[in-house]
Amino acid sequence: MIGEKKVLFSGMQATGNLTLGNYLGALKNWVSLSDEYECFYSVVDMHSITVRQNPAELRKRARALLILYIAAGLDPEKNCIYYQSHVSGHAELAWILNCFTYMGELNRMTQFKDKSAKHADNINAGLFTYPVLMASDILLYQADVVPVGIDQMQHLELTRDLAQRFNHIYGNVFTVPEAYIGKVGAKIMSLQDPAKKMSKSDENPNASIFLMDEPDVIMRKCKRAVTDSEAQILYREEQPGVKNLIDIYSACTGKQPEEVVKEFDGRGYGEFKLAVGEAVVSVLKPLQDEAARLNKDKAYIDSIIKKNAEKADYYAMKTLRKVQKKVGFPERIR
Ligand code: TYM
Image (tube, rainbow, N blue to C red):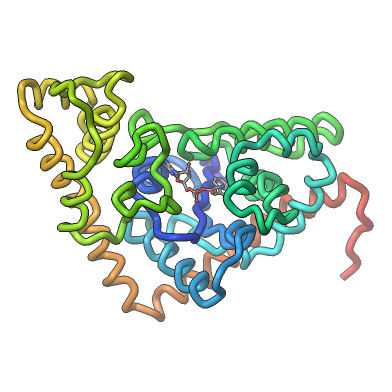
């Protein structure tokens, strides 16, 4: 708790171009939860270097992502929006928690398996211990709730296990966090292969809608989305392509999937895809415009970056000092 409020933590990697999946699965929920909680939203740039990055590109993307958080509607005066690398406590806690995590636990992580298959020439130790850094992000702020897409659930389970393990040995040190998964949009699938999640790194450019795609590109990608030959708009597992489009439309319009099915009863896929495209554009266009506006205000963004890093650091240090003491590090004499 901070004051009267429970704490929320979440983060996103500044790697590649963000997709509609990132927005509907995470960022959109962050905004809707932000009044209720004391929120920390991090641009997790330390996670990004588990895969080789171009330094100038990473810096640019990290700033663009931080601006996007604000453009999406998170008020940086109320929400702590900051770069992970600006708060050294993340790395310090990660080291300690590494010593409480078993190799077997990390070996089971599906994201590690996927990423090491994709980057076979660079299976580094950071990629392996990535979930421990993620646990540290969350536990450092004593977060109660962590809004994420379904793909992050396994990491969240590990975070809970680590918190409980630590608490069991040292008493009540960490809050054990809960995941928050949105009702719609928690797993947006590829537009070209609805069996796969929509991902930044998909090789097929038509598979993902990127948050910065121009309206005509969005419309074209929606029109080309893979469906089926059933010729009926129903929300069911047997029609994964159509189901995914219904999810996207629902998440963008705030309508329930059942309402969408009723709305498009008897209408063709062509018409439906057009409506999906328009719904996506109506959500992304204002976001893009606001990001472009904020991007010009360098002094304002810089002041946010500084102020919020200090705020994050203050709360991070409170937890870190407690943990250091518990594990037996000598007291600081200053
Ligand atoms: P990342 O950067 O891959 O994704 C950011 C968020 O977007 C969600 N997401 C999706 N949701 C629905 N459909 C999709 N197709 C889709 N693709 C991505 C993710 O679930 C995530 O919520 N390890 C994390 C970043 C992280 C983090 C944290 C998150 C680091 N520390 C602490 C929460 C708390 C990651 O790589 O997310």
